[in-house]
Length: 373
Image (tube, rainbow, N blue to C red; front, side, top):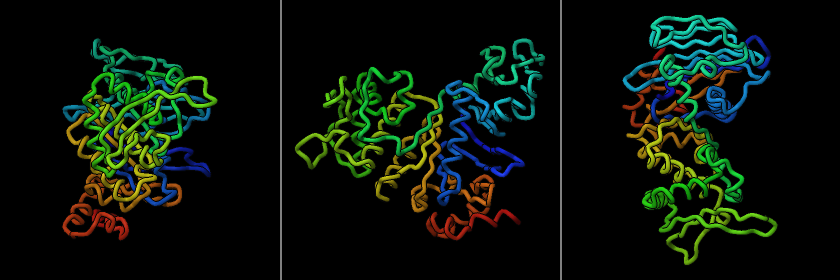
């Protein structure tokens, strides 16, 4: 199941009111906008909800917001999930399949459809708990499980979160959560190599394709002065060097790109199904390598079960992707609007025949008016 649409509002009728509307998603999604448009805030909205639904973080009294999401399941089955929270209290929770209401709850009262009983049953969930968390049953309420599984398999990264100077002590890392940490690259790579050494060639090919030409990939244990425990380091062998290069000698951009390639190859190799969000893709890379990395990601994920949502401050990077994958964000005061192929199809289609670069659509705002006829 993938996320296909998002609208979000928080702090309505207050000075710090904020809204983002009409985000539409496919399997690969590129979100671009000027600085301070709300790209990172959007990523946090999605990531925090996934963590809340999957119990990876606890709800607290500061939680507030109104999420309206749509999910697309295999077979074009569409689910709508509406959640409203204020000061940590669940005000409203609803799930629809098409027009059919499967769950409707207001504060501590509601009704949910039981598949086994073939009828709606009355429920009284605790006002501070999600029905999706307290009523799970794979046979009676399979639709809750669908949404929970989407959230549980969700992976959110900041591209800048992979730091070559971050040294990993294996015994201090939660082995179950290593895929959730882009900084845990040595552990992820070691796990991949232990399970299938054939993944090395795929990593080498992809890393070389973006301009970092290497012929070896490995992980080694090392002891550093002042550290009581050995650490794991990522190691590569560059074609034009006679020595190995461990991560402490890599530039930030180089290590970030390598880390992301390792993660993607691991997920593909072991046929993981998930939604991945990457904030600030390409940060620290030159334009050419950033473009090649984006193209490789699109190519690798094309026929996979992995949905990817990425943001970037580099507006020129949109030339590396098809216009159908783009959400162009514009902020007007407290409201962020998204222009995309779903809500601006006429404008996007007309642009395709202009022969201009994608960046020209962004800079000239050609996407704004064609669907207003």
